[in-house]
Amino acid sequence: MDDIVKAIFSLFFNKMFKNIQDKMNDYILEVVRPYISDIASSIIKKIIIAIIGASLAVIGILFLCMSMVRYLYIYIPPWMAWGLVGLIILIVGFILSMIGIRK
Image (cartoon, rainbow, N blue to C red; front, side, top):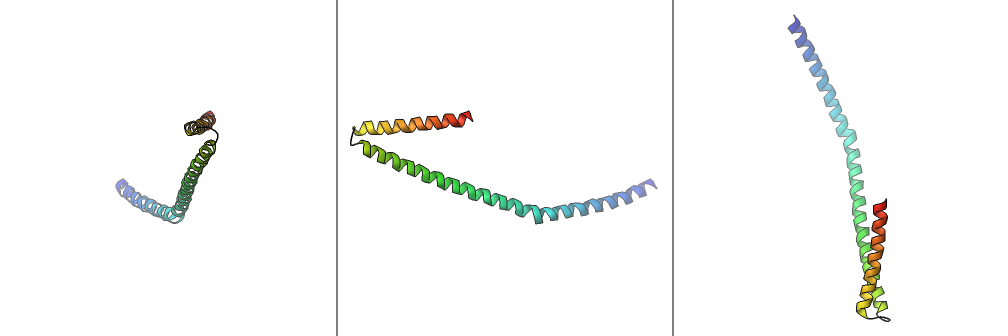
């Protein structure tokens, strides 16, 4: 008699939990998946924009440094102009890295 009761309850609970599991899977596929894909696509867009912005900033800094060197050619020898601009960039980079490490 106990085996029959256990078998009936086991069958009942297995079907009930299977139904709950199917409903949870459907909910995840309908609600959560689009939300996660929207978040992922917005993060990818932000990363792409950040990469483009950083690339343009590097190109801008390069042109700025080259124009600074060309301007210094008027007053000092070319090798000294390149060295001075390099030293200024080194100092600015060092200060920025120390600020970044401190925080």
